[in-house]
Length: 123
Image 1 (tube, rainbow, N blue to C red):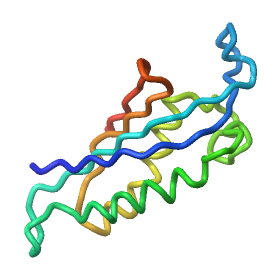
Image 2: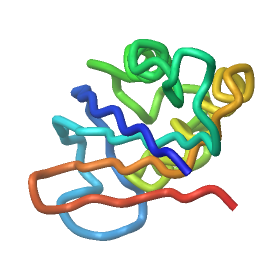
Image 3: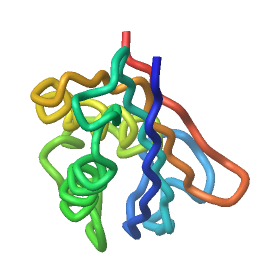
Image 4: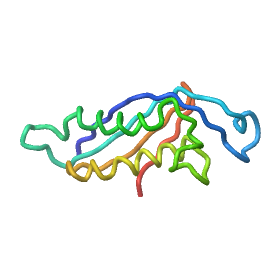
């Protein structure tokens, strides 16, 4: 199995309802996102997938969230835009393009600070 990991960042604001503390107030993060896709075989060019493709997929998704109030985005209606839900959103958004290239999205890791991250691994 070959794994390819891409890292990118975005900045956004959110508030997390009903968890207590300061996070219930509007605040922001400079999020770092790591996406790992996998292929069981190399393609005819001898690569699992072109890094540029995965970078573009991730950039397109993050551009939707960059400098936004995440609570206002359709995916987060009725749910907290937590790092967990952000990772899940990115994972789901990566599924269609990944399938077209015969790779599997293994995991999405979202860092909301230098020392706090969550990873979503598909079922």
